[in-house]
Amino acid sequence: MQAPLPPVPPPQTVPPAAIARTIVDARNVTLTYQTADKPVYALSDVSLKINKGDFISLIGPSGCGKTTLMRTIADLEQPTSGEIIVNGMTPEAARLKRAYGYVFQAPALYPWRSVERNVTLPLEIMGMPAAERQQRARDHLEMVGLAGFEKKFPWQLSGGMQQRVSIARALAFEPDLLLMDEPFGALDEITRDHLNLQLTRLWLQTQKTCIFVTHSIAEAVFLSTRIVVMSPRPGKILDVIDCEQHLPRERTLDIRETPEFAHIAQRVREGLMEGHSYDD
Amino acid sequence: MMTERLRTHLLPVAVMALAVLALWYAGALWLNAPQVLDGFARAHTDHWTLSEFARQAFSQKRPILPTPDQIASEMVQSLTGYPVTHVRNLLFHTAVTAGSALTGFGMGVVLGILLAIGIVQVKTLESSLLPWVITSQTIPVLAIAPMVVVILGNIGFSGLLPKAVISMYLCFFPITIGMVKGLRSADPLSLDLMRTYSANGQQTFWLLRLPSALPYLFTSLKIAVAASVVGAIVAELPTGGQAGLGARLLSGSYYGQTVQIWSALVMSALLSVSLVWLIGLMERFVVTGKRGGTR
Ligand SMILES: Nc1ncnc2c1ncn2[C@@H]1O[C@H](COP(=O)(O)OP(=O)(O)OP(=O)(O)O)[C@@H](O)[C@H]1O
Ligand SMILES: [Mg+2]
Image 1 (tube, rainbow over the protein chains, first blue to last red):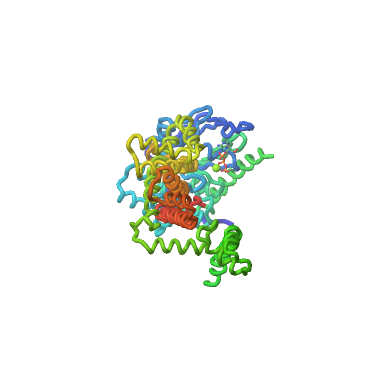
Image 2 (image 1 turned 90 degrees about the horizontal axis):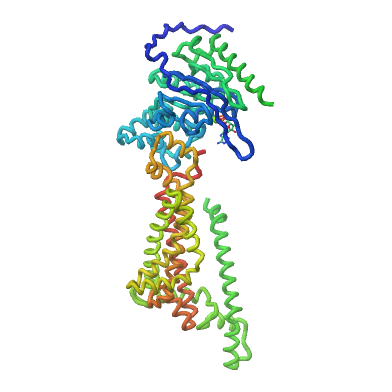
């Protein structure tokens, strides 16, 4: 079946300054968890450069160290060896400058706060005036399709709704670097498509840098400028696939029908299968 | 709907209450029997019926075990027969006890929370202070109470304060233990979130640690407020006070007035229950949102 090709987008005119500005530079990062019985090699010699405005997807079998890599970038774990530079500084300095918006694998909402007050939490910590943070919370809740739920409490929401609140919370913070750990894992296909579309638009609009973990090949290909395929035990990078060579930055859902899309997806799948062959 | 509620809720409660009452009357019959037989012997009553015996057993002046109706009528008489400020009115004594219990409770809450914050925030306090806190509770309050009264009396404090201090002594411990646990109950992910926002220690405390400690605090408060009533009553014994439920218990036991003792006991139980209920009410206003975390 031949799907109609989308119109070829005009060549991107990227300002030269933006081309090579590295925002995350991980060099030979190794991380070993010391557990009671034996050490767990969560990351082994991982090197990765992420430029400003990149959308990076991490994909790989469960337990291959995706979460660990994100946590290390966000200064929530310390690498055993190797180093990470974020925005020209250490991850800790970047964290103190509030460079990160982190959407955890679980929603991590505070149950005693209403949905709106969960979203305003980081803004309160930043010291933003009350009226402004309320406005921001409303805007971002609307963006994730939760207008009208401001006064509800987390336990009154479904799992997927809770996760969307946590996305709104990270977005409202307006960080330089948005780290998202399987944010759409708990959502149905349609909501997921909708939020994927919202996310690419937002990313294009704001020129944010995103690191995104997913188990869905289609989602990775649709969203990313580059896809990082990882393999487990020890967690390492198998393949880095550049999507921008084949797909435009600005994407619509029907791009998923193109042969380029299928081609990239196939390459990701091959990488994943290689990663899985390490399990026996 | 109504019958359903009747069946699942009221029926078991009523059955249990009836069972307790039946046991109580049976106990009174049994325990007061020697007194009754004595009375029959003294009056040379050789022929008595079972109902005569029961009537006697349930209406002794100084029974070993008074019946619920004896206690109830004593209470009604005391509560309605005298003005509330009169020493024969039980409410007067209840108010005196409640006053020192609540003062001690307030002091215990402040002390308990401050100790908990110290133990959680300052590493060395956990190993240096906590053993003392625990040891303090291994000394029976009955042993501590006279000493507190004597020492405080010596430096010029008498009346409410020594009693409140003894209440506080019983109160602060559950609060410290509950609060330490509560302040540490925030889950790692919530703490990570605070880290990514680069929140300082104070912000983490007020925005995360304290709210997550509140359910633990309220559980402790309920235990503590009941303990504070016990503390106040115990404290009234060595102070030799003329007022308070403890004083009523003491004078009742001097004169073998068992009905008076039991009335004071019932009053103290009612006081504790209503204080615990009040804390529960406060909890519902303060602790917003259902607990058990996010799904
Ligand atoms: N705190 C920890 N202590 C010890 N081992 C850990 C810890 N956190 C993760 N690990 C181990 O490190 C490895 C990588 O875990 P990580 O959470 O990064 O995987 P993941 O790729 O995010 O998996 P998933 O797709 O299931 O979320 C796993 O084998 C896990 O058991
Ligand atoms: Mg993970």
